[in-house]
Each structure stands twice: as C-alpha cells, then as structure tokens.
Length: 143
Image 1: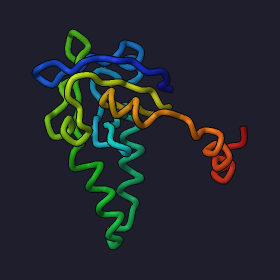
Image 2: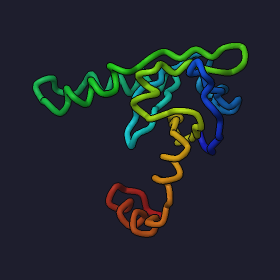
Image 3: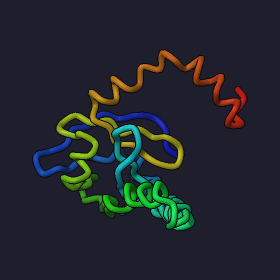
Image 4: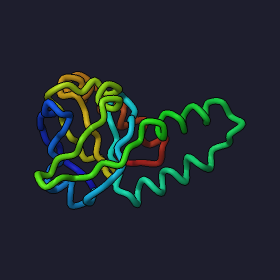
C-alpha cells in the first residue's frame, strides 16, 4: 500500500526521482498514465493488469466507455527505474499534468499520483473534509 507524499524536481531531460519507499512497491518497471484531477497515475504491474482488465470489460458500444479507455491507455507508458532511482516521464504525460519543475509524488493506496507542486497545493486544501466524509457513508465507508 502506498501512502505519504514526497517533493522532488523534474530535471531538464524529464526525469524525476521516485522515492525509495515507492520504488519498493512499484518495482523496477511500472506503468505511468494520465490520471484524474490533473495528475499522473503510477501503477505497479499487478495493479495495472487488474485495472486494464476492468477497462477491457467496459462495453465498446458505449461512447463514454470508449473515451474513458482511450484516456488511460493512449498515454500509458512503461516506466523503468534507472540506477539513480529516476524515471523518464514522456513529454505527452508531463504536458497533460502540467508538470514543469517541482512535483509531488503522493501515495494513495494502490497507486502513486504525480502532481505539479502548485496544482497539488491548490487542489488539496481539505477545507471541505467534514462534508466529504458525510458523503463517504453513501459509498459504504463509515468512520
């Protein structure tokens, strides 16, 4: 399970260090793709395979399902960790998440999210958590 957050910088070649604690769970190679909310998702191979199966099960006749599958699969790439613990983020993924220099890698259970630092700070004020917590009961999570 992934948790916590780490700040790093993207170098001029588009590489970012993956924290050692995340590398332990992600492995030497893993899938990075466009994520929701303006970030990137990084999945360990096993989690990606499970997610990909769910995507494959969506009905091709449904226009929203086709678009949803395209969103995640078209930009997906296999990231390989180099000897310095870095991965190369392709420009198409960096552009989709507006990643320029400072980034935050966030562990969120079964995946790691990669955020532009400014966007992360703007979208995670958590001022509305009491209201959100009330709605989580509708999804089966009671605190």
